[in-house]
Length: 256
Image (cartoon, rainbow, N blue to C red; front, side, top):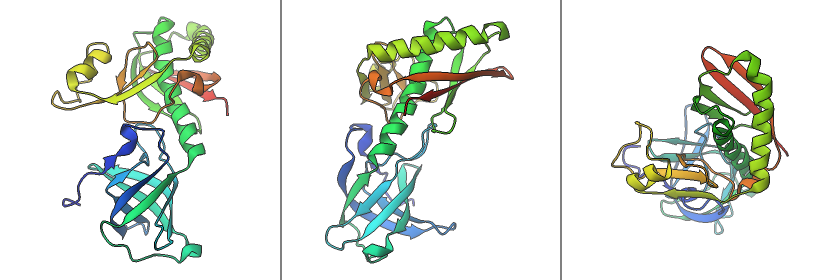
């Protein structure tokens, strides 16, 4: 893999594109018997950052093959599109490096993933707005089966019920109000300014971080996909808040 260039991430700049073209680089069958395609660029979001991968298919107009993409992963900057060749389209074709292929992302899945991920970011803002700014965001799980955001720090047991109601009311007030979601890859200093004047230590000062900013709230570094307007998240319910071992988990659901 050392000789393979990093995959160009089209969704980093344009999350609305669900169909595009790219150039085939190679394909292989891994130790787990899964087949993977590597392309010059991709609109498929790989699993990561608490967000599940896109699914869809890859095809070629001339050879009439269809590769079903059921999982996408990234390693060392190279994106692997895992799946299988549809037998009804003739099975596995002979593909040459540089050959043009067409990419199609499943729209329903992308929209759901983007709404769930954006809802997690919105809750970070809501935590501050309801007086819980002392809790530090640590991670999020934005899958449809039990999404949550986790924070370092705790909410006193006697405040859990009231804070759960406050968070839900605040979240839905922000969703109702709406607001544009800004996403861009920026020079370090610009990204830092947009994120309230600082960035996490793991981000190199020589890098160009990708930042998401929801409405008027401060931005934060993020590599996932998001809604274009906060209102697209729709109704949000704070299902439960759990406090354990110095951490607070806020579980939520969104209207489907």
